Image (cartoon, rainbow over all chains, first blue to last red; front, side):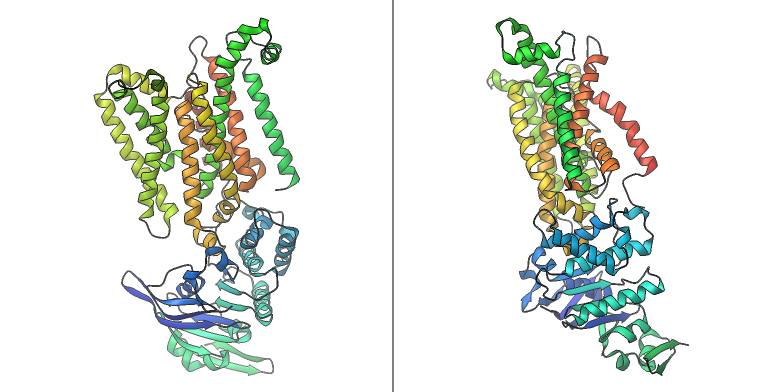
Amino acid sequence: MSFSAKNLVVCRNGNRILDDVSVEVPAGELTIVLGQNGAGKSTLLRALAGGLKPDSGTVFCGEAPLSALSARELARRRAVMMQSTQAAFDFTVEETVLLGRTPWMDAVETRRDREVAANALRTVGLEKFARRRLSTLSGGERQRVQIARTFAQGITPTGTPTTFFLDEPLAALDFRHRAEIMRCLRELAEAGNAVFVVLHDLNLSMRFADRVLVMDRGKIVLSGAPEAVLTPENLARVFGIETEIIRDSRGAFVRIL
Amino acid sequence: MGRKSIILLLALALAALLALVLSCTAGTAELGLADIWGALKAGEDSDLARTILFEIRLPRALAALICGLALGTAGAALQGLFRNPLADPGLIGVSSGGALGALLVFAFGSALFACLPVAFHALALPIAAMVGALAITFLVLALAGTLGRRRIGGMLLIGIAVNAAVAALTGLILHFAADNQIRLYTFWMLGGLDRSEWILLLPAACVVGLGLLILPRCSRELDVLALGEAEAHFAGIDVARLRRYVVWTSAAMVGAAVAVGGMIGFVGLVAPHLVRLTAGPSHRFLVPASGLLGGILLIAADVAARLAGGASELPIGVVTAIIGAPFFLYVLMKGEGRTE
């Protein structure tokens, strides 16, 4: 059940934050969205995920427009991680990850929910932190808890693929965990899930993305395979940076000059 | 909920029951546990004990329990809804609305109710308080409905504005009221359970009991809401529906408590805090445990009010505020219950 959008327009205070955007989030692919601050990346992610109503245009989940689905039905088809999530109360790590299982449970979590949560915690390397309270964690660790919660929500009981939307999931992470989370996202995509990530890292995009979307002033200006999109000419035009592409046996990377 | 939580809840329920029985022994007339047992068995010789127990002590103890349950449960649920451990039931307009309703009876009651049967007079005040509480809550909710998507945070501000407006209206009525009316209103505002009668307790118990069935069912969703309104929506929560459930149920429960005991502050604030400090913030435990703890605290406060004042007892609102206000400051300074 993949997500797509047709002719999305979102206006705030007279500005077109999304200006006639049409996009697909195909299953089995890791799509990375790049763009300068304020280009409309987060707005696009939230509109696709059903977190805001576009002024015009429609978002579809499969064939159905999002408005035809209840919040719970939608939550079983996609999991979302927002840029910054602050829990108002001091839950434990395990409790927080289990919150992601809410759309799948009746009133009480089952053993299966606990297993999924424990797996998700292992994926982000926090299995030893399960009983710790959020207030005792560092910023990066808390962010990994939210990533784990999002993973826990996207695992269906039958194993059917879902869609993951993540808005700058790596922002507070150290180098090792940035790479590890990207590998997890890659694995999710290879398992047939659709993964849609907003990122600010050219090299991770080059290395992990199936497809890169570049946004500028509310429009998708470039899209395609990373090596085709992330060329010095395009990067100079959209980001105003001077770069060179270096290739070796393991692939290409971008050096910012 | 783990086994440990269930045992803790049972222990709290047992403690509440114990407090209820023990509080029946407190008062000027001697009434020991043996007398209570005798009165319950209804022997011929225990007529006096029976009268004291069933006409005075038990209704009063039950009133304290009902009010405490209502305030604690609603307090926990509303703090969850507002995502703020310092939120108080007064924020949704229940208290100011109840006060306005009561004041209308004190000020205009004799004129309004002159034509009604005498049996209704005793209920006029609680009914007016309840109606006032629900009416002002409705106003707050309706105004919040006109806001955009982020309604819960805005609702808090609307609650403050509406409370200020209601307080102004109350002040205006007080300005023109007679001295004895102002005195009656003042004492009512301080709270007291000395008016507890069965005819009032039974409907209040029904309202509070219904709330005790509904609010714990919102626990899971309140847990998710702690992450934020947008996050809760993404996790499949119908936030608007949750808000309606919690606000209306809490308003009805607190309204019933106000009708029975007048203004009793701080229980709805303190009970959830104590639970959160000892057992964590998960609402599945927090909501029922706060209710039970609220009941225990209020029974204890009522006993203190009865014993401390000598012949004329202290208003219970004074007792809860004397304990509650320093605690509130302590919590503010320590910044407990909220992640940095």
